[in-house]
Length: 240
Image 1 (tube, helix red, strand yellow):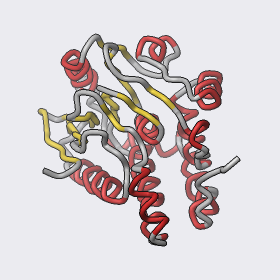
Image 2 (image 1 turned 90 degrees about the vertical axis):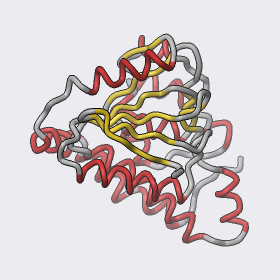
Image 3 (image 1 turned 180 degrees about the horizontal axis):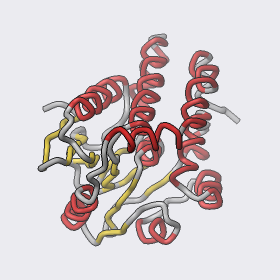
């Protein structure tokens, strides 16, 4: 089983992350990029839903154990490849010519929450799972591009609070703050609601993609022009 797989449910691409905590490393980035390319290549797809096969986790963000080993072994190109690879994932979601819907059926922490914010829409289960940016407690600054596209998903006042406190937030509060489209009572209802929402979209790819390209022009410019400074220098941690 691949760590990320997809299948068609009528005209909806259902993308499943299969690696339990769905920690993000170079393999994750490569696999997600390949899946998104396949979804784009299938012209019959009208929407994409990203979910997890875990009952507890959607994605817990960066695979810190993998990252630590790469840095210790001086495999710096692997680290840079991962960072650029995830930026490619984020850009593909920002430009996907069909709606990208995060169906958050468990914890979404750090880069997992950021991945959800790169999607166009988010739904979340209410009975399990928190959405959290713990980077302030871990000493990990966001890349500029991440800040840019998270702000399109979360109202600025709420993002400011969540980013600076590192507080865990549940689905009901996220729905009230318009971060998610809907809070669903359990995992089964979440998937049903996510698919139902996805099926409301029958937009032509050309105009949908052009809308997103123009909407996110400034975000894409930040990713392309500002992120490389921090990636190339591997300025990934703040010690004090």
